[in-house]
Amino acid sequence: MIVSTPVSRTLPLLLGFLIAIGPVSVDLYLPAFPTIAAQFHSQATPGITLAAYFAGLAVGQITQGPLSDRIGRRIPILAGLTLYTIASAGCGLSWSGESLTLWRLLAGFGASASVVIPRAMVRDIADGPAAVTLFSRLTLVMGVAPVIAPMIGSAVISLVSWRWIFGLATLYGLIAMALSLRFLPDTLPPLRRSVIGVRSILVRYVEIGSERSFLSHALAGSFAMAALFAYLSGTPGVFIQGLHWSPFGYAVMFASNAALYIAMSQGNPLLVRRFGVRPVLSLAVMVLLAGTLFLSIAAWLQAGPIILLAAIACCQVSHGCTLPDTVVGALSAHQSHAGSASALMGTMQYIAGAGAGAAVGAMSDGTAQPMAFVMLIAAALAAISLIFRPAGS
Figure 1 (cartoon, rainbow, N blue to C red):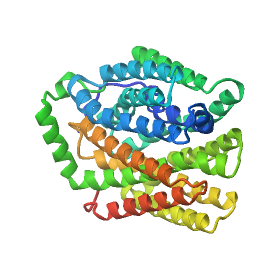
Figure 2: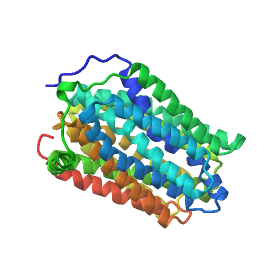
Figure 3: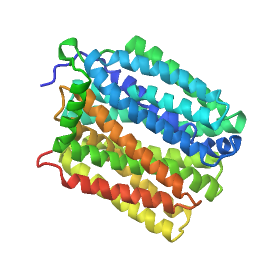
């Protein structure tokens, strides 16, 4: 039974705004990849900074989750937002590729609190279909970011320096801090907080990670996230450099796919209420596998952009169900330490994502083949992970 602090109807909006720091910090500067590469005379620099951001998210989540279980949800979020805001300003003032990479690493560490803790807050106040519905509301808010952020980023680099992109990220951090100070409650009452040491935290992670339902759902979600990050890392090179699209044209394509993701995430609760989490998640992963297989064949045959976009759209539709449903499945048995479970899952997701992004960057050849290959492998591993779900989960 969940005993929760009363929350307002605006809480999902605020939590979605906080989680959106993740996509805002990535999607804003994707159109600027070629410009950043030219600035620092290195084609590898943009990919390295993206991997550094993902690494900061991964390391930060493994620490922020248990911390929020111990001292509450609100203080770690505010501290993380402070670091994120300072680091984003540092990105805009970077004097080299190395300094930009370092600031991106720190920004990812700071943003990790806003990525992992809101998911634990959802678990504090809801479970099952109710949690799916709440996650979908969060997705609706945070989903606005990948729709408009690339367009804003492309507009910025067409008018002023790419550095102003990180000025916007700094402003976003300041607004998030102000809203959190004014409206964010602490959904974990003192009586439900855990008092544990470092050794106990490690033992807890081992216990959570060895629980079959958590592990199967977390692995499926991580590999699905890897497919998504391969898409994020690969599409600027495929469409802007390989197919010679303008940054704005790329932003429109990216926004259209994000809209598909949002639409499916909003239909997901209806499907879950009618059919249950398990069958909806299974079908979604199969759609992802089919979409990545379609994309791989199209890339191998060097098909035109329309065929590539159709395959990518299929994958985005899948993500609208896969990502929220794997979170619900992974956290369903971990109410008392949802922060730790959410942190472990988040770390797994961003490690997988960083690995996928690095693999795409290492194999990049101006075609869609490396991206499609990595996405196909990730989708296949997600499907295999679900085979090991216990019955009824």
